[in-house]
Length: 132
Image 1 (cartoon, rainbow, N blue to C red):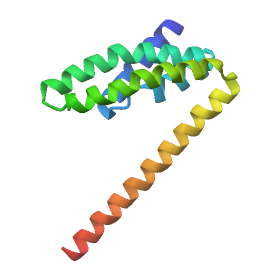
Image 2 (cartoon, rainbow, N blue to C red):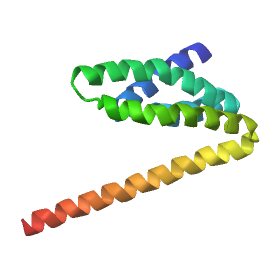
Image 3 (cartoon, one colour):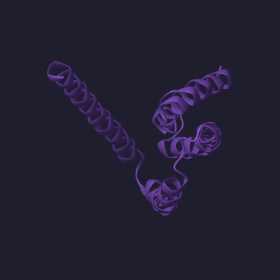
Image 4 (spheres, rainbow, N blue to C red):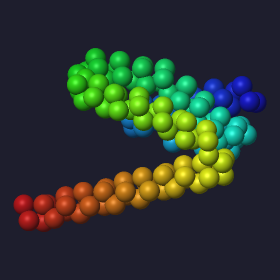
């Protein structure tokens, strides 16, 4: 079941990550930690290893359609490499419970911000329809 479960996780999360542009970590880490009993640090490290080929395939597909801003990607990548080094060192030094809570808190904050933004956009759309 574990082999099949991991493959199903990869199929589902890969499809969702590529279609929504999320990289997969928000799906992989909780699934690996809660369903497959990995520690938080190991789940995060494993997720990062999974994201590399997933991101590469999705990037190639998007690039073929002209949907990648290469200059922007390159500039952000410079900071991301440095940030990834520092962040991974920090994550490995934290207690697992603290790291789990930080990860969960991040997911909650991102979800709330996205909900607020989609509500605002929906409201603005209704206002334009009513006045337009």
